[in-house]
Image 1: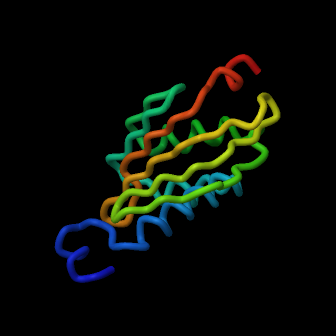
Image 2: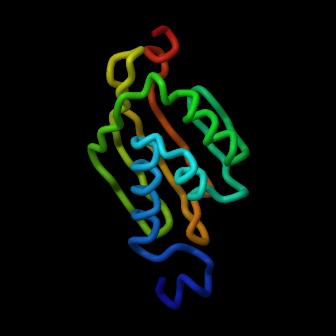
Length: 126
């Protein structure tokens, strides 16, 4: 972490991207304890199918999806300071592949906010 980052409590360049990549890898690998360790206590998630205000709810939600989740294929990653947008394709056994834009915000080395955008119709009708 660089000096400026230590003073502001924000993640330095590269840190947020590494943390976001670790989150995706933990989700893909169904390593939910590792995933949970990356989430801040003031974590929040907003997406088409849920709004969560607790890191444990996020962990539990992704773990419930695990039996039908077969892969997450990262197409592009865009990073700017404490923000990372990962464009990936979610593969499941219940729907055709679903493109997802996932915006992660990192503070103090933890993910404190995720905003996801995707079309949920195939997932809920599957």
